[in-house]
Length: 403
Image (tube, rainbow, N blue to C red; front, side, top):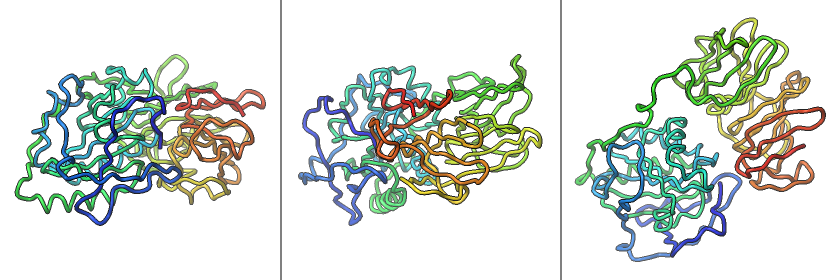
């Protein structure tokens, strides 16, 4: 979980408490982070959703939303910034909830940029398409909504009932079951005023012309191939050095399956690394490392069990452990180094023993140099090796590190 920089200016921060449920939304955040759990109990009349400022730019809708659009629906305001890996993890849970509850639930992504370049609306438009976001997104560049709702860390989710009362907030990722239970109970208690009519969606992805590539994330080059992670198309493309496509692994729709090239499925693949007879793939959305056999033209899973998990230390059988958004890969001899963006670490997979372990980084988000075990990273996403140096693109630190 990422915190707002101390130099961000805020007016009074409102902290909300749950009024209706014994299970509080004000709880611990992501696995390795803690947030401010203090609660200021205010009269319920204060806990009201605020109208949207008319100058806020919107995406994925045909017109800016108004407070009336929220009435009769359970609303989740998802305060996020697109450079935060924890925010990306939350998107999967929100999508599951949207699919389950349909138009009775309204998720609004409130983008609160951490860096200046994240304020650009056109860049955000591309990000919304890249991450497959299909709910309304408002670009809260001046933290107007963030200030009112007491947002102090990324990600933060605020729950509003169908009558417009703000019930509480949760900072950090996870807790799908708690949100699921809360939504279900709110729908039962507000049955008489529910409004299941659709909101005026106009998805940004519909404005983009179809193309062979969609948000390609990484490339790798061998003597024979140029490999491309066609991230938004959830596939890996192998072309020759003249740009002619030779093989495609995966399909347009996200999925998780091994097998022949046409049958295999990936979810937002990123990092690539050629081995002697194949290609390793960081299957980021599935939290897996896959291997493409270039002779058999087939895909197998070599690390990860498909669950998002975090570990600070230890050595594990690679197929019996969860990974955390593997993003970048580089291979040296039989050691595959992995930029584990979700746990803010560098991991190492032994391709012969098929064991995997944390290699560098304490798991705490930061930018601390020093001994491998006490060093810290912030969403490492790219790797490169030269001689005995391993270089790391430490994305959320806006830094390049070396080991």
